[in-house]
Image (cartoon, rainbow, N blue to C red):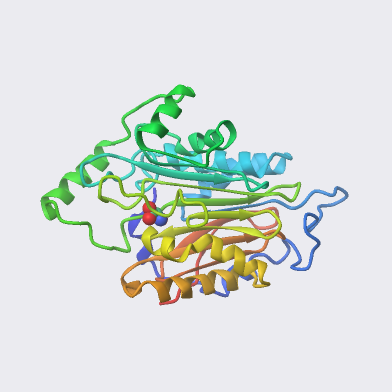
Length: 333
Ligand code: ASP
């Protein structure tokens, strides 16, 4: 079960940990699309990378797809569907904390190796918003559907409506209401934990997915960074991908994940790119000491980077050599 106070955990390994774990995965100077060929085949060594502890289960679901020659796109969708359906993950999908009126409203987006993308926001009553986002990408000329339009599209495409408010989440909301009335939820570092996922497949292609119930007890209608292409997720198959977690408003102001990928395009490794993007978020948000933002990045050659503002962000990385591991991210504070 994900502990939403995990933002407050003490960082154990620090910033130096992330680059180190890639040793043996792919040389930084490997030619694009041919990084770290495995054995006699020309297959690229796959990587699955996900935010937070619930990323371990997501990576497990993605791994058989990645190691059997499947697409990174299928892997990230299968991966993030796990926390979406898990009632104990209170920041994603079923079981997520509701908004200030008690409605669970979901945001998700997905992006493939060709730069195609799909997104849903303010979607209610659908267990797997990531799969709706994928269908928006594949079946419509649009990128983003929201609210009732997204729900209508989902139902017309065979998704069933269901109540996503679990008893645990309802009790949490009742308690929050009793303590806060109609007050605006304060910026907090412990009321959000999105899953963002990136994968590199054996063909050398990258894809990403991001899905969340958003900030707990948010304004009705609030949409964060997670379904915004370029903010909560960005993938460029020539360069790498990035995803984010934390206070979405702060990430949107910096167009965070597009920034991480563009920094990689300029020659920074994924670790340096995440660190520079955190500095940009800090520069754009005077309240940065009171919020959390974390970035996770995966380069075309399979190199991983991560950085966040406050200690406590961790991520799961699955590689052929190291297996599936939880790693503490370095932080600014
Ligand atoms: N970034 C998400 C949002 O602002 C929250 C999270 O990361 O948990 O909606």
